[in-house]
Image (cartoon, rainbow, N blue to C red; front, side, top):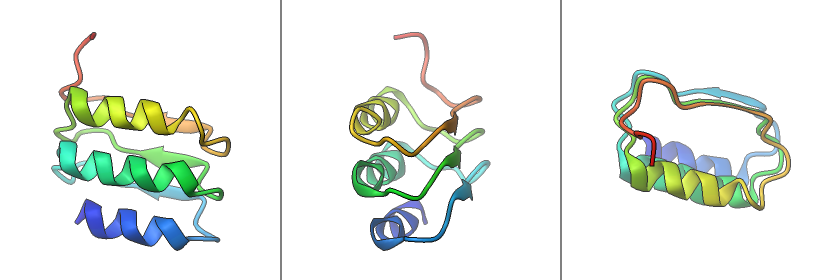
Length: 84
């Protein structure tokens, strides 16, 4: 699932938009995607809405965005993130 996609993102040099909405991605999948975002330099749009990503997954993505300079659009609506 999301972990396999994340591994592919590590070497991706062409994909700019990725829609993973409604795939039951949990914290583990989000953390794997976050790791890929740290080094991916082509992805500009990532849609992760309507999954089951919690605080840990969202935190990992937020931390990855501190070094990622290419992602300009991120959708995390309808997850289990909360306000913290």
